[in-house]
Image (tube, rainbow, N blue to C red; front, side):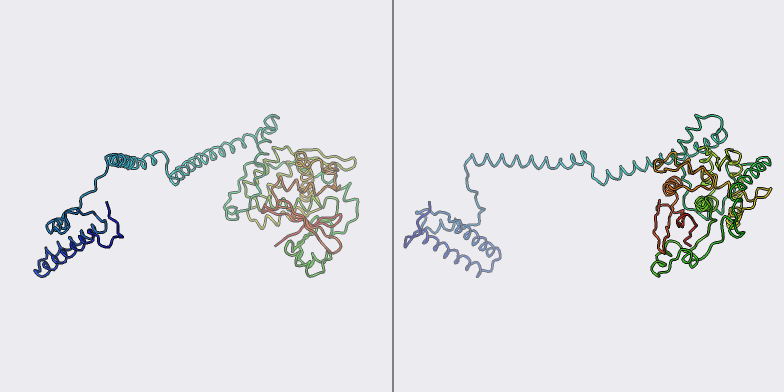
Length: 461
């Protein structure tokens, strides 16, 4: 028990003073003797004494003034542990055991966690590896399917007119992949082509003679009934520059000229008759087909025409044409243009044959009329399977020679979507213009310059 500190003279304090004085004497004697061991020992005694004083350990009353008892207490002995009750010792032992068990469990937990859940990066790499395996398998399957599809196309081309059920299934296949032919042209690839088409049309004198007679008769009852100056008889004229474009459509303001030049800077004039839309659109379409598409894309387009069984018919007053031989003659003449190896020569031959109006015995001068009849029937077929069909209120005009269709914008939208071609319409009126564009994402482009009642061809060179 501790004694009260308020008393004037406490025996415990006297004992503390005696102990400190004795300790100082011992340290002084040891330092004078210069014994290192005794000096170290004195320091240890001093530390023990300070610890005891801080803990305020009790002294026995009988030990006051007893020099031997003081010396025993300050000997360098290890500190004895304080006795604790048995209950506390048992609790501590239990705590130690529980702590050791926790440490053992924690040692095994990381191993268990690693086995249960893999790190995210490892799983991600494993998944990407699986994806790459799937991609490789899909690529091999796609290559195999492409080879089988090429074999099927060749087989279908020989039996296209024999079985209607097979034709309908082929049409569905073409519609699923249809006209993936309007890809941007690869000029280097095109230069290395061998110019061997998958399907060739043979020349036929009887077919050619029939074609010449029918087209002559059609011209006789239509365009030949009108007086036309010689320079305007050609279906197309040479391309003119931007000044001619602005002058023709009365574009005078500088700001309008700058805006127009961003979209169109050249013009090619088209003959003014009821077929001007099909002349302007058809020439640019055939130019892409013959000069922009590669051979594979060209063959896909021809196969599309055959599989869709495009008709070849036209009406004019009491005169009617409904003959697939004329379609075959048109495809033969188109093929002969495609077989011209030099691209510049091919373009020049296309322009001269398309613009020619005078019909000769060798078939020269029939190409524009055949192209126009073909495009009118193509529009009718595409519109039949289009969602825009109900918006074309005068669809019957499509198959009437030199008849204009008031729903041309609907037809243009259907053609652009089906043929995968970007079509830009520029409407001119009273010295101003507005622009309407369809299928902007496609690179192959057709520009139509429209003034009320007439179409011309535009270029952005």
